[in-house]
Image 1 (tube, rainbow over the protein chains, first blue to last red):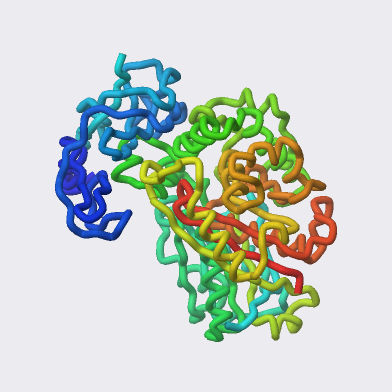
Image 2: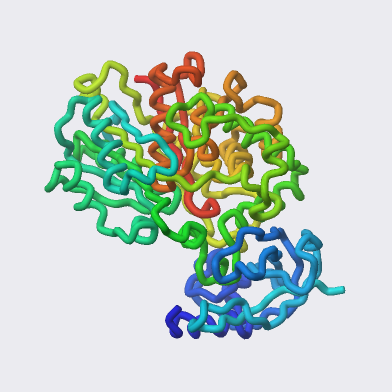
Amino acid sequence: MPSPRYWREVPARYRLEAGRCVACGAVVYPARRICPACRGERFETLTLSRRAKVVTSTVIHVAPTDFQMEAPYAMAVVETPEGARLMVQVADCEPNEVQPGMEVALEFRRIRKEGKSGILCYGHKAVPLR
Amino acid sequence: MREVAVVAAGMTPFGELWGHSLRDLFVEAALEALRHARAETVDAVYVGNMAGGQFVGQEHLGPLLADHLGIRGVPITRVESACASGGVALRSAFLDVASGMSDLVLAVGVEKMNDGGDVTNVLATAADQENEVYHGITFPGLYAMIARAHMEQHGTTLEDLAAVSVKNHRHGALNPRAQFRHEVTLEQVMTSSLVADPLRLLHCSPVSDGAAAVLLCPLARAREFTDRPVEIRASGLATASMALAQRRDPAFLDAVSLSASRAYHMAGLGPADIDVAEVHDCFSIAEICVIEAMCFAEQGRGGEAARTGETALGGRLPVNTSGGLKSKGHPVGATGIAQVIEIFEQLRGEAGERQVKDAAVGLTQNMGGSGASSVVHIFERA
């Protein structure tokens, strides 16, 4: 991907920055211009906790090209204590262990490599808390 | 608004059609519909196509396809709403005729998926690229997450999921245009290879080529073109959060529910009035969630419907008599129109071995992405 497309997303992907709607308090991740709950336009920036709970999950066996070497791997929608939900890969565990309600930490990791000469893509992965 | 009817249909078989290009498929389906109505030309065309640019490197389909159909000059618009592109093309054609702007309008859906494109990556463009696909999720993966949430909340079982595929293959075995004209057993489904746990290969609709076309005109003129017109009683379109993570309940398809209530309201009909329905079973779990959101089954009871035969041919409300996306095939942009053709034939009594006795009112539901867009149409024998 062209690098501006990558660095535009850095605040959300690297620092887990979200927006809290000043009008209704909804936490929106990644931040956006208009609150999906109340259409408010004023937000304060907040940083999400680096822990979350699994809402639902799957184990990918047939993977996209950039992830083929990693399959099978677990993916989950997780919810932070602030109420933000994120799509993340769940690493450092048996993929089949990941179940709804599981507590996870969000760790800064390399997400993928775009072929031989593309960008190294970073972000957060979930790791089960033991 | 004027009343609108479907007066003719044309469709290619669905499958791996290596001998046919995107333009060949379009022309075959559109020409068949025109010939049935003995129409030389039309006032307008709407083409549903998800990803011609990515699958075969061809955008700007409007002029290309009008040219190849021999109707250069006619207004033609390409419509995109991922896998709901066909249904939204029908809605566009319906609105064009209903408004009085055009009289004779073709709605065509076409997709050429088998031509070297990276299908997994192309289909994933219907999900949120920055927040979902970036992290390694696939389309089957999104529906697998919906399935796990449904199993967790409602006790839906792996057998329930498999029963949807078994039912739809049983129907598709009776459909001469289906990609897979054979039955599958519960055991075959449950032991097929894993794609995204809990979804296995036989829970997933296939990669297909194909096209489907219907011809619309004002109901008042319908008998110039056919003895047995089918009226479009309602059209409902709705959207929901693009990303699965943004939905409060990942096991409930809000856009489907909203598009259905809009259509029921417009027709003045309810779920109990429907005799036969074609719904978007891109994955077995999708049919379960859709029939709940359409109020064909109670919330959480969609899994039972296929297992107990309620939604099979001969059951209370036959769903996907064509074989559905699972068995008939799923050339994404063509699917929404192919659903309409099954209902058109059912309401005209032309469905052969798949005929639902005395079917008078039918419904189609077509959705895009992980349910972020959904379009519902209701039809009645005129």
